[in-house]
Length: 434
Image (tube, rainbow, N blue to C red):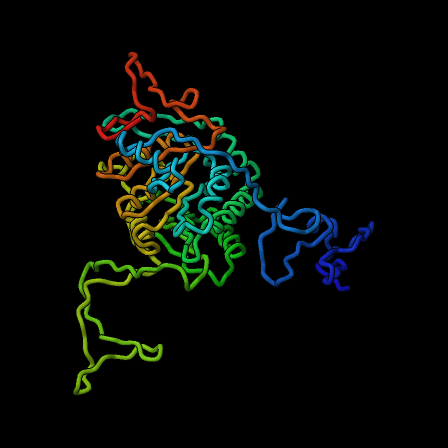
């Protein structure tokens, strides 16, 4: 028996014995009953961790994430002819696996991830997530209509309002368990060579790093990348302008993970010493006369500070006017570095669909989902604009009804004037089937 923070503690049992708080307590002692409700969680391995209300049950064990599996319902298949669809149905009915289709899913990741896990556990090669990290983000925003000066105010749906309450209703006390449960599930998706990228900023990045260390272990830490968007306009403030985000990278099994060295072109060529590694040490290269050799380098190896410009309002090609949209160049670097062709990429906060679009262009398989209806519509339209893009499935948990659906069938939703429009509001292309 010893004392911990002024209270007797039995390390063999991992518990605080029942004691009575004295009527008069010394100023330097804290009441035992305030310490995790009378017990110490079982984290006696020596690793520091964040504690929040509800992380441990009454027995001192960590609470597992909620796993509710729901069946998926295909709303539409695009970029596939009627003949190809019939062939897929015949292959599937014969007991053989049909050809791979990428998945765009509308639904809360709280239900989507457990529903995908039986099929994709240990099969995902790269996970990139850009989760909400601003306590003021309530899924509402204002965007400008293309080729117009009109602004469109988008209000949160009932589902989005619930997700916001689940995530931010208690500030960090609700965000941290939400983030922890998400990361625990995502780790199960990763293959042994898989990598997780978590994109955050200064709001909660320091808390998230502690959670990631707990779930993945410090031995599987790969990088803490700084994305420096040098072209951001910074208003006057009493602090240094914030012009960077953090991208924390963890491997399922460090050393087994895929990593492809990336290089970028220098603004100006530089003259460098020629060097080679011998026995783990860098040695200058010399000629037969012992003279040090130099070389002109026009490229440099990409390090953990990425100088990539953010999207600008004047950009008419890539900028979709979607809040939180990331540039394709950023995701291009992530996907090229941590996957090879035909590897599987997952993004469960797809937003404007940058991850799916870049994965499609780089010939990677992908799964993308989002709770926001506007996010799914934006991603869908974006994918339809990619030449020769693969078939895209839009399934969802059955308890959530998709826009433009009635009785499980896709129907044309009338627009003003009575003319029908395709679900999602995107223009139909000739090779799209409904």
